[in-house]
Length: 288
Image (cartoon, rainbow, N blue to C red; front, side, top):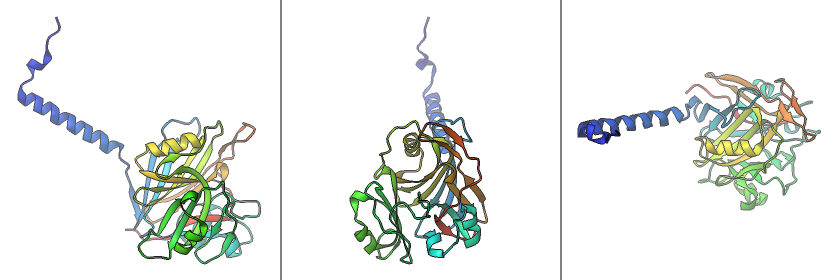
């Protein structure tokens, strides 16, 4: 015979059960929350498990979260510095004393950025605005009262408007349009990825994943993570994807390597790292 179990619980026992349920739920929420490590003022680090496991590498997404009001963004270019050849991301960090380095975006064989790119000092790496590159990173605010850096959709502002407000502008392919809409189409192609994001509080995120995913899946995964992402742009994939951290609290060098070719062939270029003509960075910083 099935008994009504509710009559075996006293009011006190019911209260205890409710308290235990709340405590268990709180503990679960805490375990799901990101464990951010402060690397230096305005710069934080965390690692997340990807939404689904990849057969290659560790299926982890590495995130460096930056408050540009405390840790200003920089863009460095071989064409501006007169370097005879591009540098790997770790060499950029070591040579110029940078705390964090990531790809600035895809580039041509001559080292020129594929989208519009202007540095804070006025150097024009590429003066051409591409209509298919629908995301702008802007930094180095000229006007008081605006964000020090932001990711802006092409439909929301012209380059001339952005140039009046910001010194630095870097144009890239868009993955997630503000306020959180995936715009990359499904595809069978997968690769290691470096990406740039902005959360709803205006912080900038350097994102890296060595395990290969389609950008459609990767974009949806990013939105599922507790990052509150509003916008994301694609920087580079495969062997050219990189993220380097050089701070007193953490030193880390991450290179991509996996990629599906347009012909559908899966490749693994190892973790040697590709020379990069242009990078985004945060300058060296002290331990908080």
